[in-house]
Image 1 (cartoon, rainbow, N blue to C red):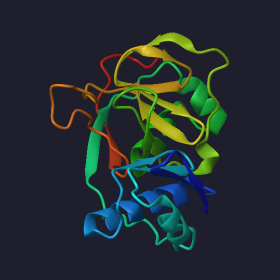
Image 2 (cartoon, rainbow, N blue to C red):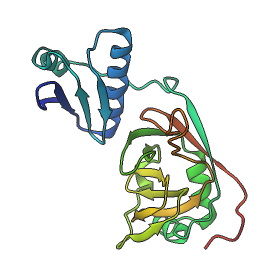
Image 3 (cartoon, helix red, strand yellow):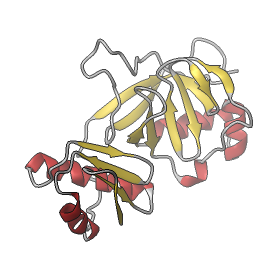
Image 4 (cartoon, one colour):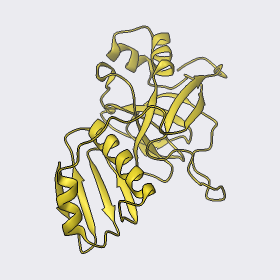
Length: 209
């Protein structure tokens, strides 16, 4: 693990994989909860975790550099179920890329166990891991100017759900009516780093495009 200073009271921890970043994030949260890690914010990303509000970053950096990471416990986080209609406009392209029938895309996706690796792009948007690497898909050659809110999408190793309408180049495989982000709700976001996620198929309102 590489530990880099960021300003006067922050450290950026770099690891070699997304799995390591998730394990590191979980371990740092555990240590903060037990009182052995003085940190204000713990922010995971694809292969990094940022610690902010660290009073003695030099001392902590040496300690963290020697940290051995335990595996992430499957029981360490709550599970959110997201109802999804597998009716996305990119189902045919995803099925062709996977080399499976169109109906198999829904089965594979709905039987996977996902975890929110990190959040970003838009409020409430989680980058979910859980599909085996053979199901990675490339982004679209050109992004759509507007992706509808609730779109369930794939890009690279990640699954995501668009919390609001926005441009996007991910492959759309379904839709959900679940509101992922609501500033009037506590918490505002349904998904947070470490949350486990299951996609539950529901009947589509029309034929897949």
